[in-house]
Image (cartoon, rainbow, N blue to C red; front, side):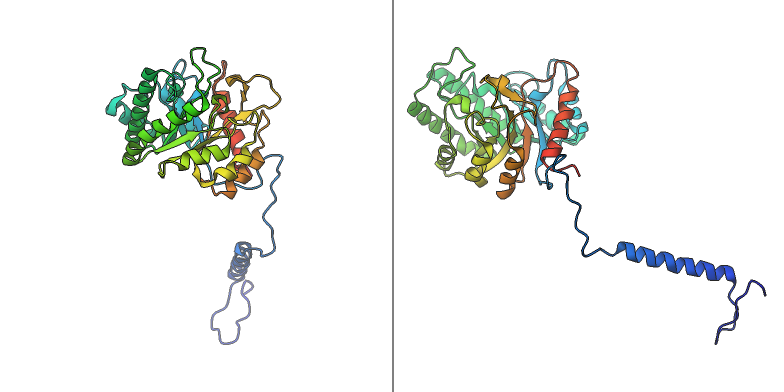
Length: 345
């Protein structure tokens, strides 16, 4: 037969040309697959272009504070949470206030509704924050204000617990508050004494409810101005529930974030990514910038965090949502954080 090969030795059936070709192609394909699946021992992983992104990917979760959204004036809580999710954030940091969705009047039902909303959208809550520590400082010269501050702090701990959130940012006190005309300066030693007493009164409840009291560094306050002072303050309570919320921009006027991180070490429980411009002359809240539009040394910050094996949240904090097209800030920030965290290839 013209289409048949000769019958090989010990085979009693001829092989058709078409079958032989199929067999040969199958063998060739299997060989190619095997060769492709075998790892090349000496092929190095592609080198990253550090003009685009960090040299490695860091195991840090990407979060954003609600102050970056036009909430509640021009955006609902659900809209803000969904925008954060759509922009690629792993989590949001919620702000406790005297009104709106998260406040003293929320109650368990309201807090449960917030938690359900975040679960439905599929976004985590990295922590609770509050601007109420400024109108109601724990170290005020007014005993009534100090009492109100403690009342609010207790409610914040309870709210965090109800939301299933571990992290509560705490501002322990202030010698000076430059943006408040009604704050009477407090002597440093008095501020320190009052701050220790106030945080000490919160520890038992925080331990019972499983909430970390994360002390934030803030150069505007004139208190806890060095990493050594911060460490001594936190360690003095002898509690695992008193930790540090480190803010990269809050010491940037005179110091450097990457210098603080190695000294604070494992005490860092939560983190704010805040940009600052050392070239500016404005020392108010206006001095903070969108990420990468400042002078914070982000490669050095990430190396320092990696050296202490920090794997928690990094939350962008910014107080000025864009007047026009506010979604742009959220998406731009997500892109910037992807580059800082090495999420781009």
